[in-house]
Length: 118
Image (tube, rainbow, N blue to C red; front, side, top):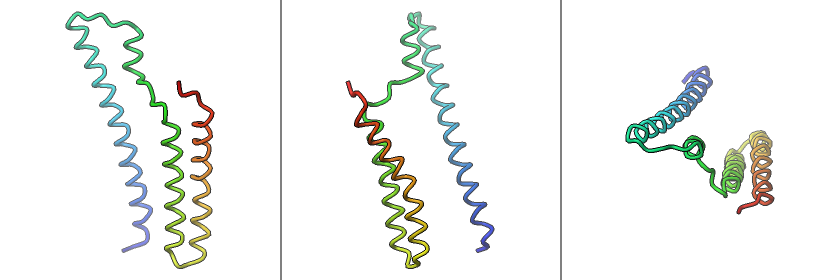
């Protein structure tokens, strides 16, 4: 396989992920508007608080904890991949790459620790 295919496949993969992200966000907003339209057609009164709650659902209390664990597991995966590759340069590179998700994961865990959960 030609080495030029690697970046092409990477950019195609990133494009697919972003298109899917925007598509699902569009579908969610469209369904919310359809729900509001149906409620108004049936004569139900919608207060601004209800509309705001429909548009911006309440995020879970442990969102920071979940994100922190996710980032730390990504860092652990990078470290394990580094140990699986027999080249020492690859290990150093992957350890350096794992430092970024470790810092983000620790920051999320700190945010979770100091956030009011009531």
